[in-house]
Length: 606
Image 1 (cartoon, one colour):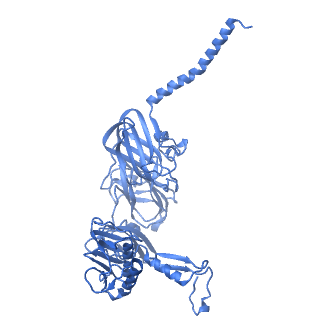
Image 2 (cartoon, rainbow, N blue to C red):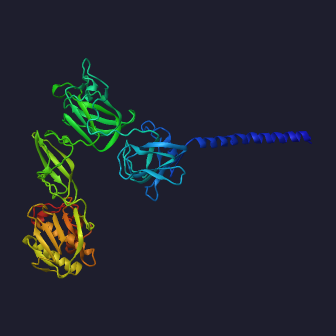
Image 3 (tube, helix red, strand yellow):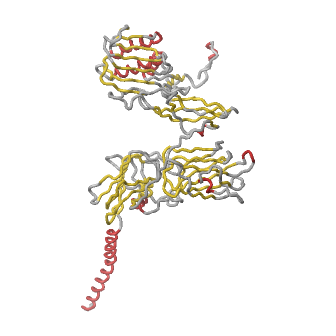
């Protein structure tokens, strides 16, 4: 039997052991509470995995090339106003905030807000963006400083298909390498002149025994230059320090010679993390080379790495640059004579002649070979005023004297006759109307409305339309010569609309169809049929229409080689195609070549 003292001793030892076991946890809890009171708290709407938690966006590791996985990534699924993706930091005490930097993983965010709060309940929007800036690092300088304890980044719209810096990615998440909340922030420099003049330039190599140093590329003097030693495609690098974070959109390189084959142009905010600006893989033959990018970026450093070059006409393989010009906005410089279409950065309209400003080619001829809006810009380069502002894709072709050719597409902005689309909303038809200006009121079509054909070539189109109105709408319109309550078919004497284009004016109790060719007049009747089909009272909104095809060939294929059909069925298909202005019907008869010689024909059909 144990003694009482032994029993008490045993109990004391047990209590002591229990205290020793509990004490570390108790002390740890106190430590965590203390830490929570002195350190920021990071939360989010959710994370793709625990490895991409919200704390990763505030750890200071923003270099995606050295800290690839140090980022927050949202849960999978697109965002909306009702179901946003958000990232939040709560500081122990309120801080004064001058601005932000967002290091996006991808350039896939369209709409987001930055909000601040002091109580976590009432949030104030201090910044709201509804357009994609196409920037890897976005810098936001507030017009007025804010004092707040909580900052929240709220994303309500992004796309899934958007590349990162290395490859194409189609994944429905939004991700941030770093969300910097800044107590001080200098504004981004935006200049109208060359921002590189007088800045600092350094190079990986300088031609020995010469004064052709890197600084000559930013001295504003086109008679000085930087040159490298003679070498066989040894990469050479020129780095320009702009001294402050600067908006960049255009770079002009004045090469000493046209012997440069390949180079990479990159930019950086800190001199360590560089992003692509432009890459060339083939010789351009340009001595003064203008490089524009679609959206401006912010950078302090610009690095030009030349990776491939030849000896040129003097058989001396080195690199020479007279000047590097850097601009905050798009540079529209167009030389009077060019040797390559790459020298044309944009096309503009000569308002006096109403033609495109196309420079002459020193080594050939330039022609307009494509336009997706021929009644606005034709293949002669003539420009016609659309109803409202129009962006037209135009393709130029340079045919050189040595028979080599090159093509390049441009987007040309053409001012419209009206600032907006007017009173009545743009009607919905298939395909959509190219141009519309809405007037007040409507025009009703009934049995008393007459079809008036002023151009004999359009008689058949009017007759087909007349029968369609009977079949589809139960309307019986007669042919006549009325000048009111009429659908009038007129010839486009100006020759603007081409084969398939047309204009419709719906006003003053008339509908006037203007076309250059029969097809255009016929397509106009298809538009009118669709408009009437949508109205129970056969009322069409008053307005002006200019319509024409965006694509030359608009087709449909029917495979009758595997599923046979009769001719009446094909006729019905053709009629339905015409309703939607399709113009190419491919009937797939057979997978094998037909023996057409058996049918007294030398044509081949597949």
